[in-house]
Picture (cartoon, rainbow, N blue to C red):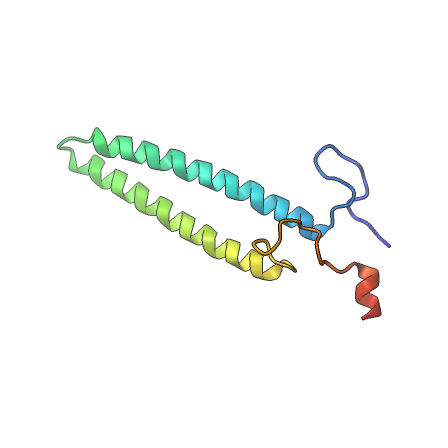
Length: 109
């Protein structure tokens, strides 16, 4: 059996399969997008609060907040698609390797 992740590294254990790797990447991106959205919202809120009577700054802050919300919605849709594609689902199991058939098991089906 060909194992693409057979090399021992400090980042990827050798017992992971492609679905475990995909779930790891999705978790990493979810954290990064959440952190970036939070920082962006704080910066936009500060811009909005310090705009005073400058309508262009208010519009800029509102536009940035809207774009952040749209980005989060797009990520939520992508996350749903990934959850649908990964066997067992990202949201349905705590263990990424649970109930995933191996190549040999699939061949015998």
